[in-house]
Image (cartoon, rainbow, N blue to C red; front, side, top):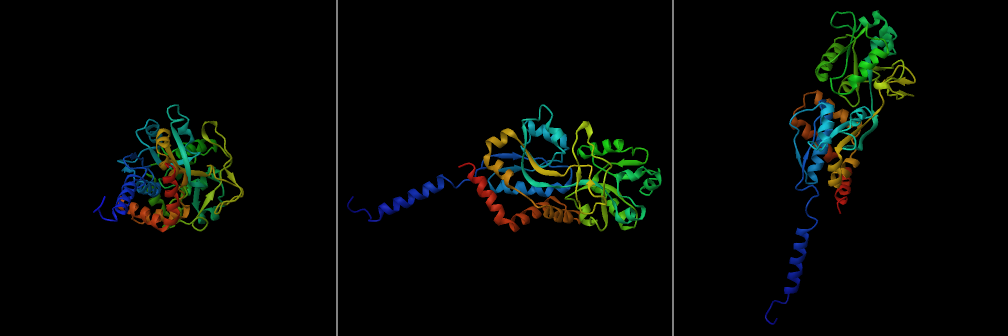
Length: 343
């Protein structure tokens, strides 16, 4: 050993430590894993989906861009059979019906609580008309004279802007129009919800009465403020399709004209729904799905930007990345937990 540099041992130790660092702990848990996510047909849910996509990418996953929007029922079947891995837009209990299919149950799992119970659904009218005519309940529209006030196509019936086919909420509306004996005075107007609501907003701004279904978070109630511009209508009693029963009355809802206020829909949790095998094989992703929470007010604020024209894929991606950086301290705790799940 004579003639070798005196610091050879130290150099060898440094090299060994560098090799160890490079070979262990430096890779992200999702490296080498392709993830396929679905995109909802309602654009007010795209922001949350983009947040999940960006966070999965921070964990090393390669997340494929959704090629198109998909209706609810196909999404759950595609996730169940492994053609898709997850989506961020599960609404429960509204989407419980999809989990009952034999090919879906046990293969699709709701995970986490992106929004816990705060997602409301129901029927709204403009406040001025409600006060002028004494409207507090959807059943008031059985009166043909009241219903005709909301007629926009000249057939004498109220035009209720409702749900897109395939969302699930349209099934509830159709059921309730029958249950509340409203078929003779109310039409359920369906199409592309965002387009229909832009027309509704234009009517409201021109001083016309408006009647519509909506949910929170949603840009509609950001541009027509609850309790100031529009109010919730109660329904006569709690009823759901297929003999399902749930008590949809709540003691107090801001902007509702009856107390208690029966919304007609249960308060929903917005949750990730994912393939069971994917969750088992990817504990980092499963942990992330369990941890992420996005405040309703933040979703509503993004939805306002969306409605104001910041609606391109690039805009929505930017909104998500900005939200992540604003909330970086909290986000990093989720990422640490996700990484720890594979150790």
